[in-house]
Amino acid sequence: MGHHPEQIPPAALPVDGRGMIGNMKTAALVSLCGAIDFMCFPRIDSPTVFAALLDGDRGGAFAITPRAPNANVKQMYLPETNVLLTRFMTGDGVCELLDLMPVASNGTRADALPNCVLRIVRLVFGRMTLDVRCDPRFDYARAKHTAHAVEKGVEFMRDDGAPSLRLRSNVPLTIDGQSACATLNLEEGACACFVLGEAEGLADIDANHDSILTETIDYWKEWSSRSTYRGRYREVVLRSALTLKMLSSEEFGAIVAAPTFGLPEAQDGSRRWDYRFTWIRDAAFSVYALLRLGYTGEAERFMKWIAERSRDCSAHGQLRVMYSVDGADAPEESELKSLVGEVPGRIVIGNGAREQVQLDVYGALLDSVYLYNKYGAAISYDGWRHVTRTVDYVVEHWREPDNGIWEFRNGTRALLHSRLMCWVTVDRALRLAEKRSLPAALARWFETRDEIHRDIHEQFWNDDIESFVQTPGSDTLDASALMMPLVRFIGPKDPRWIGTLDAIGRELRVDPLIFRYTRGSTLDGLPGTEGGFSACSFWYAEALARAGRVDEGRLVFEKMLAYANHLGLFSEEVATSGEALGNFPQALTHLALISAAYQLDRNLDRVHVPWT
Image 1 (tube, helix red, strand yellow):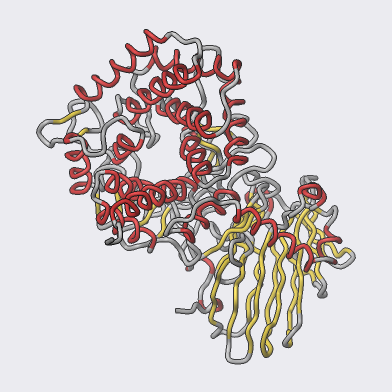
Image 2 (image 1 turned 45 degrees about the vertical axis):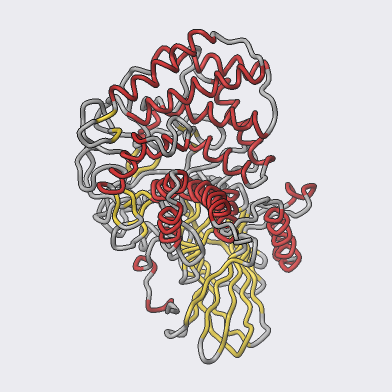
């Protein structure tokens, strides 16, 4: 089914009616209307330049839109790349809009390319008129600017003295207030080119846009060809990998949770958080996924980033929950008044969860260290010293209440998932110490691991509902329990685990959607009812497959694939109505998808043996 851009105001498009482009410095979302309506610049965690996705009036956008009211729209990525193609089609003409952030296929030229967006408009049939409007709003729409004509373009000069942005084009541009505009009356074969970015070096891009396009396509195709995954879900797994690559930082090696902030997790417009940071929790998932797909270089760079955080942790081994891309503390949470949003709800930047205690992050850290040691490189002496300090911290503190994986904002409590990941911390450290013959307080660590194991089985098991529960003595289910067999705490066919898996399927599931905890509960003390948490659905599919219920797991997995957008991108959550909720696209969802696909392949290849 086609879309009609003139008939869809940007705000009326679903959140996931967009594709993502990026260059491992920053990223942008391009809507089915041909508008870049979300972009932070110059870095993925910098203030926005375009945020019409959040506020259609004040956010700013860079739109290239056909004037014909009846144009159909199709959007796709060029195969095995992150170059986005939006096609506008009418009876009179077919127009192609190519969007990309240039990256160099030859590593020696990587620094020579400026940080910019390249937009190429080509008419492949007939004729078409398009309107172009570039309307930036700097610093989350808080900073004023003026537009000045310069050679072959327009410069947007900020009043606060911060670096300006320049738009260059091979067609004439006019200035309308603070915006740059153009009208394109294109005949078959005509091409218009626009490049927006830091003023230095843009001339080369605009003059050589065809070769820059080819070079960027070559870069992504070469990167895609390095994937070792050859399973039955190759297309969706590769799209997930390409998305994760865009969410990674070329300079630092970190991977952010999402390129956006402020997209509501609840249909009433509430629960709007900032996800442009790197969570230690995602480390193990990221390293596992990258190594599984053969991307050892990316895994190594992320491990180096994690090792730096481990080295910089407090004297007694305590880590932050999340960090900025460069490893600095994530900024404090503050309300953003300049962007009000299309639906009610407070928009914040920064993240208050940075101050929380989340004991599960240590398990994620140690699991990633262990995986990288197994499939990558052996840990260094200094690296091991930092690890032992962290393990000793967990040995001291594992019994304490915390805010947990779901970052509860209404107090701390003893949580199953945190307890589980404390077990992972000690277990992986013991495995490493024994495998590499490393010095460690083995007797103490063994004793602690056994103690945590017993504690989980005695304190977090509910005989009445035959399931592990979120907190001791409760009957509250928590989908994060799905990690138990995935981290090898419990056998995937253990009777206690099967009881838990069935309870989650009964109580937290709506079709393939898995909710984090009881739907509509006030457990987290926040307004609004959130959707199913997409990563949990993929964990559920994987847990079913591991339990031998492969057909069930496959059906859940393939139903979830239908919730991807038209390009294979996933948001954080999905409402029961099918609407995408939360920040988009979401790294954790794509990581969980890769893991589930890998497991399903293994099970299906084992189960469906052809007759001989």
